[in-house]
Length: 511
Image 1 (tube, rainbow, N blue to C red):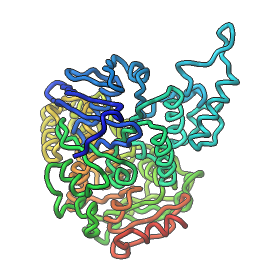
Image 2: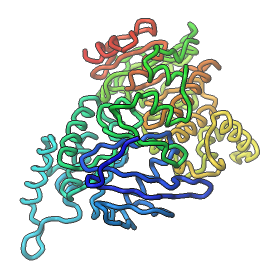
Image 3: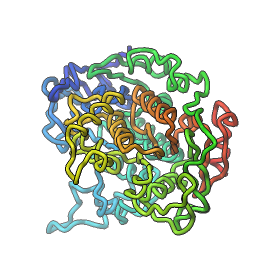
Image 4: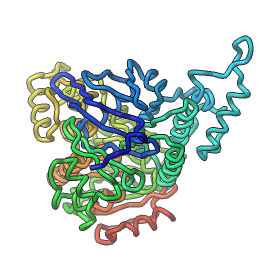
């Protein structure tokens, strides 16, 4: 356990509790965080991290407990209250106004003004450029932020926090959509902020990042604090055990995390080709893409973020237009112009952005699961509710979707359970080919193990999977790996050709 000197404590949390219908999301949580400290919050999906962040951000109100900043009690009725007290939160879904410029976003609540109330645009742009430059971002602050990369948008968010004299900055999965160079730059910026005395609260499922960046880690499980650990004195296995409540042992994730061996997730490939892509181009990113997918195969497609993996998955599913090339399914050439046609041909797609592209969050779990198979549960366009409930109940049980009811709103589920709902949707549609894009992004270790188990089961039952992932350990589990670079394939590796550290993949990524 870790103790802090009282004089350095900037944030105190005492007895914070929050419950929702049927769920005790956070219970009697206590914690001290010091100035200039980078403090990680760890835990599985549903452990209470998101609830804690929303309470500290003023998004929701606590049932019990108190928050102190610099020994003074604070009460948040809105995010504005939290920001006025010095707490700024950068969520996964960034809160910038896309059509406004970077400078306007940074000063959005307090534009500098001249006499008569006229906005001082010159000062606004000069000060915005200065703070962005200090953060290491050389960009035109007069441009709308919709034109910026994810890393640049995060820079604008950090600049906004600095402008408003933030004392504490909370970051929720900030590296999830960043390529490796941008992650390193983010870490450099955060270390600079740390030296300025700003406390950083960092939420991530990537333990390697937590080990590199953070001083302290607090683990939550089932809404309660398990413990607070010094990262310099704590092994990864200890943190994993604290997060899930037991040792992962010889599991896929456990072996990968501990570096014991290179697990194989597939191993069921037959000779029959179920999907063939030949000379595919989209007129922009993709150039001359050709590959075959076999029955029962787990085919990995990897590379640094932004090299065409996302575009390729969208083309296969008919969500992105192609200008040339052919696609064949079971030896028959097909034209896939829309996702509806892809579904009819037995292809399912789990997109990177499950919240916006894979699910309709306000709808129930039941409605999300059956939205792609209405024809099989309907007669004359009338849904057979009994048959629908039977399918949904069976899949919810077999996939271990944790919810108090299948009528529960999907948006209230944890990230791992949302991913299971997307998977259940495609199993219900009886698809034979699944395209997984970043299947475990933003989900915890325990949920990862369950997702991997479900992929393995789908393959064992004769399905075929294309797994698109920028996570090296994930790609290394596949039967074959195709490495993308600059919109085309730089090379192919079979499972036995991949070394335990993935250097063969990295060498192809850098071509």
